[in-house]
Amino acid sequence: MKPKQPTSADFARVFGEKTPQPILSLKKFAVLALLTQATPEELHFVLTKRAAHVRQPGDICFPGGHQEPNETLRQTALRETEEELGIPAQKIQILGKSNFMLTAYGALIQPYIGIVEYHDFCQLHFQTEEVAEVFTVPLSFFQTQQPEVHYMHWKADMSVPFPYERIENGKNYRFREYRVPELFYHYHGYTIWGLTAQIIENIMQEVTISST
Image (cartoon, rainbow, N blue to C red):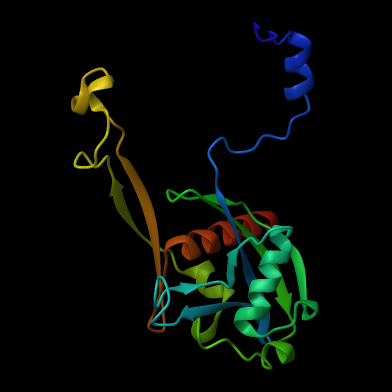
């Protein structure tokens, strides 16, 4: 039997009010850019140093992780923060969310911005299996220090089996090479780089522009 051909009305019905989603499947993550009034003068970001035996050991990052089934990304950010830092979700006020990131590894990362009272932050009991250290950085540091910018280059790996013979020019096809900027901040012996640095810079740029 010949399949029914879609009509313009079918296209309008399916796509007219559609909320677009990525065509390729993405793993979804959420992080919480947590703030606290660590000093009387200003807010600080709360950052963690990952334990030595976990994936990406020693990296400086915000609490966060993979979205669980039947969970919103907001709930993910709060759950992961409670699990990693021991700060109850009800002690955290969500202020909003910043721009999300799409990574080269097929992940969507949605940062949320929250605040916790300093006396509640001081009661934290972080999970030592994942977190080696928790520290804070004043916002003024990111306002006054420009990050170093270095570039990571990505290109097609020709040693991996792939049907190049089906493509015009085969292995000589002009595959795009990606030049990805990586930001580096150095704060009191800590190196803040990668996704965390990108998220911080984006948040600080937006809040600075809106407050001027």
